[in-house]
Length: 633
Image (cartoon, rainbow, N blue to C red; front, side, top):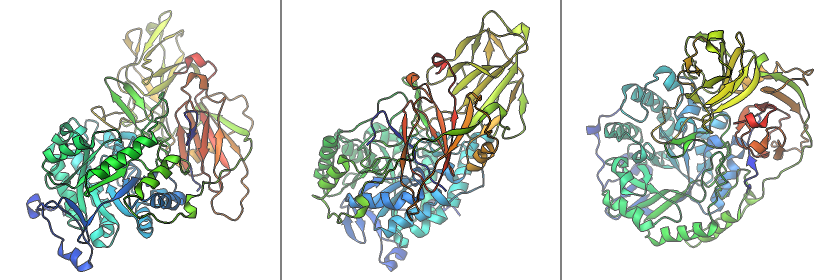
């Protein structure tokens, strides 16, 4: 388990039926097709039981997200989960990863969702699928693709907005035919499919939307798996979260009152059960500038026993059992009136029973020891071994290129007003907003005010850093000593789109007027730099110069190291110490780390990361650091 001074980074080489056409009664029976196959999974509301192949059933599940872990490590983590006593796993499906551009779908490599589900099946694990389309999950925009705002800037997510429903339907009509053969009634491992996600926590309370979404899922799932919802364990959440004819489940942590949470389920109409905690928290998320979240093992064990004591019709899912990593720009953020804007970490270790490095904690073994009182455990296997690590020595960064010397991603766009990332068709990366200062705009000193910065900007005069603006730090204004003719630059990065709550329409870049001495600045050029995929990163790498020791940040640096192989396809993992690179004393350094195929972003002041390597030998760092620590926001 990592301390608060450590961070893990993982990289790899490498026809809708109308609602009135179906009715699912509380005492629903198996569909004819499922009976013919001898397989069924349903809910018997009269007895309050989940029924698997006609017998009462309960599950002990754990969350693991395939998109937070390279494919080469899926088997290792799944075996470790099975050996802990789990009989099921749960995963979200992230729309934004599978459709990064409208109509362009990706289901290969580390996004091989079908392969992941089939692997779980081969290992004897059932699957609980949470396809959203909203997933939260501390992911950028809660798993929605940002191009939705490029096409429709005023779209209201998670509602009956016609444009929103149109794209949701197109996505699910592409996804769900892949899922249908994997449903339990069709011979696959998927026993449950979630409709939306924690909708009772959202401001809209749009029942037309949630019932439309239920019907869309039902047209594919039919009776071959169970549809369910998940919401907080309180009646206030279930008020808008419950969807008629869909199984109700709740989420709460080990210290919560089990009776209180499940009484809310009873009040919502599911009086006899089953009673399911879909997110039982053995750990918790950590955001920037927070101490690493911890959940005590003793509390977890007590929480498990309280759940089991509630009755023989309780099931639960650990969220998370293995956390993983938010590669690239996939981490999200929280934002509300009390905390402001709070980005999530690249690390999603979550203080889970299996660490981000794949190692087993004492928490893991305590959970295993507890579950043996309720289920038969498999024999210990080699999968319980510690993931091997190795040292690869010092890496010299021998090439560099200034960001200002990198060719922009597309022709530079000019406009009177600053444009958002989405308007510029930029998913993530950087925009260099540039304006030529006029004498009439200046004072001595001048005061720059950018209240709509999303989320962080290095302020430059003639490409020289002079300060930082930060949404996270609530720094929106700085003084400038400038002269006419100088180029004012604002190098803006996204630090994660809001993934939860009221403020999810979180466009990036500069979203309102830029003021200098109270006057609006007009006339901007906006070169964009995308770092979303390996092709874009390799394009930058080709521009690196070996004779560039004078290059100062913001810049890219690259170096090589040697991995000696011993016949295995996967090299030993390692740790990368970045101390000294980011003015770590300011607790705000930002690094960009690239290894073959995976682009990863480290967004904390931690000095050490663990790197999972597959036959790779080169990495690059993009550093925002510049010489004056006090300027770093």
